[in-house]
Amino acid sequence: MKPIKIFLIVSIIMVSCNGINQSKKNNKNQKDMAIDIAKQYGFNRDFLKKHVNIIELRNSSSAITLIPAWQGRVMTSTADGDSGFSFGWINRAMIASGKILPHINAFGGEERLWLGPEGGQFSIFFSKGKSFVYDNWQTPAFLDTTPFQLISSTDSSALFGNDIVAENYSGTSLKFRIEREVTLLSEKELNKLLSIDTKSLKNVAYRSDNKLINKGDKAWKKETGLLSIWMLGMFNPSPAIIIVIPVKPGDDTVIGPKVNDSYFGRIGSDRLKVSGNHIFFKADGKSRGKIGIPPLRATGVMGSYDSDNKILTLLICRLPDGRKDYVNSSWQIQENPFSGDALNSYNDGPLEDGSQMGPFYELETSSPAADLKPGESLRHIQYTLHLKGDVQDLDKVARKVLGVSLEEITSAF
Image (cartoon, rainbow, N blue to C red; front, top):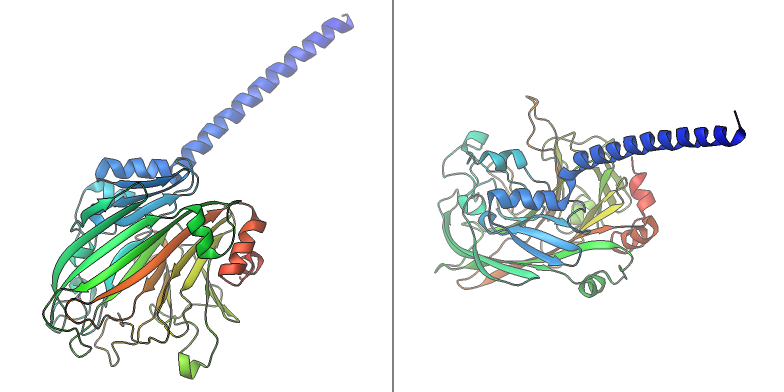
């Protein structure tokens, strides 16, 4: 056989093999996309659209989805358009069922408004005289299934409100109004907030301005019970995610412990670590545990880092200096009902019977107790940020905002 013919035959075989390999690669890519699509923002926004009315705030590739029917909560967000990561945890199975459940309807969402306290003599989750057990625990409808009114909206902000009458465990009647405005930040506003240039990073950032107004004719007093604004964010967990919370230095006997891990039982050193003035906590969704930061220790900053996907999440809130009176939500009659924590984080995990709501993890902030006279209001402003990109650029932000390097975070355990 002539050399030219041999060359042509070999070339045809190679092209054929390459074609087969490319076909296999394309099929694999299609399969990977099918697996990953549930993690994409566009998929989750469109899923929510099928079941409930949404409001989307968008600025180029940054967007957030809010639900007026669920108290104007931010369900999820993206830093990279419809195909980007969907940052909020969404309970799709429950939402798709269309059922309203007793006790709580855990729709999910990466930033939702609650009020404290949950337990104790001033609780708004337990009726007067009832024992503090799960069967008697009930999330108030205005924090669960009652829609908030959409007052106004633009491409970058939405304002919600609701008038409420409630009674606490001690029988005190409370008449109040909640107003909540969510605003998508521009890159200029984000850079001003962080005092660092973020143009090299994909990002989504938003502010929520939450207001509690006493609409009754009596002052709210400690003796009869106070409320607080309580913000909870539910996010998707991973073995690659570690939560980091900087705390203020000082004497434990004066400003309290650096971290309180007594909520659901002590947490082992393989999951919770204190290193200098930083708290590290695993967010893998595989072991149930909750931590709190006392108010005099709290800096108003916390975050998490996903080392697999190079995503840095930050929560920033403005806490008033020197305030110690934060409501205590433990499920018992309390000796000191105003000894609660200012910041919290929760890692979901299986219950004793093996069931699990999530998995998810939470980052939470609270306001001080609201001792308001008639007509007075309390505001709690929180910023939620997701940044994705080059590790070196993310590291600069982590060092600036959290006071710790990404290497220190990833090597904490």
